[in-house]
Image (cartoon, rainbow, N blue to C red; front, side, top):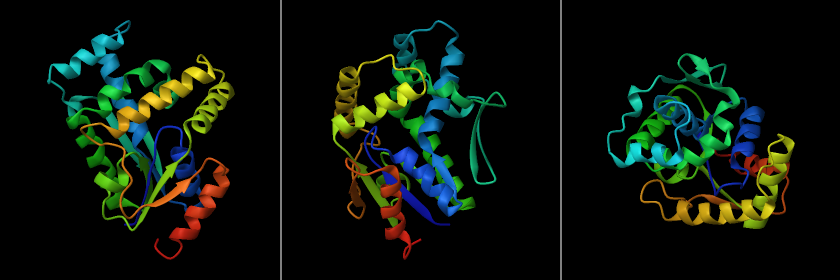
Amino acid sequence: MRVIALDGPAGSGKSTVAGMIAEQLDILHADSGAIYRTLTLAFMRRLGPGSSAQEFGSIFQSGSVDPDSLPVQVLLKDRRQSNCLDGADVGLEIRTPEVTSRIRYIADNVPCRNTVNRLLREFSEQTDLVADGRDMGTVVFPDSASKFFLEASVQIRAKRRYEEMLGHGRANLSLEEIERDIARRDEEDRNREVGALRKADDAILIDTSDLSREDVVSRILAQIQYRF
């Protein structure tokens, strides 16, 4: 099966672009971020309501983490990914600020990353797909012939995130706060011991700062027409 690997920092548009590419090519969008968020929600439920982010983080400091013991299922149907917990699709429940503030513990945990990477590779054995993340081209699918790295300035990415939050009616942070958060996240992602954000040597770099999502998709499709 064929894989398109999209990497890039937070807010670079990779998830939206991946979804648009998947729709145009009628292939699976393997959303690694959604799987990490589903695992995060599962651990939150295990701790119980009212647990703090600090309590959540302490789980991973103890070293007793077994993501495979969680009631999480990631199902593929009609080239669509369904993220389920206790048998029910989690929907937008994984997009809450509470999940977002805790996901870093999951993303930094080796057993959790191994679980997510295994699922993504299993998907690639079943169907053609486009996968987005921060190490798709370097770790998960290093043999992909279609690798892309999307980037944009911190200011542009913060503006996009702010407008997205406004559109969903949950702009609880100022533009300046989002800029600081993205800059901090960039620094952390580039220096992570596991799954660090890095452009693969053979990935095509696309600066999306002055491009619409449609422009980015067109550039990627033009590049892969002879590869994919």
